[in-house]
Length: 148
Image (cartoon, rainbow, N blue to C red; front, side, top):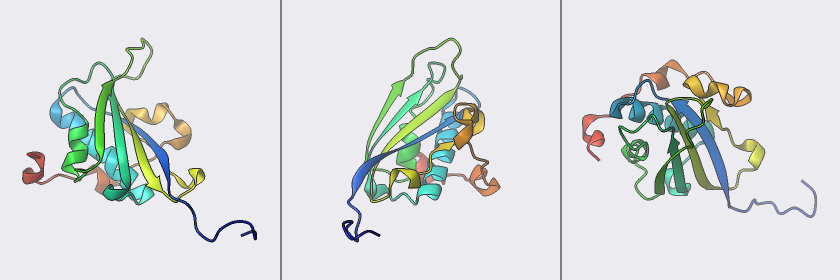
């Protein structure tokens, strides 16, 4: 560390991106894919819900059965501002795609943030795509949390 740099890092708002695809236009497929994506973003970046300022979810026009933000609520993100939007219907765009942009208050630098692209979305950013651990793929949310 140089003499002119403080021994601490300031807290700033950073963006974390991610994307996935749903198997079908059903509530369960949308929520399952979104939970899987969020859990992997949490795991890779050590996210704490109290540090999340807001989250923007987008879906392609072929996903209308449920709001993906509900998956974040099911994971306990009750204080963060959440918003869902629809993407442009681009003819050559990826179908059944869910994207997320998390605004995260952190001391981490830009190069320390791990963006996550899984399932069919690996083609959007092959340089950032990952293979999911089998345990993450098998996660189920208890019934009482589904009602939130």
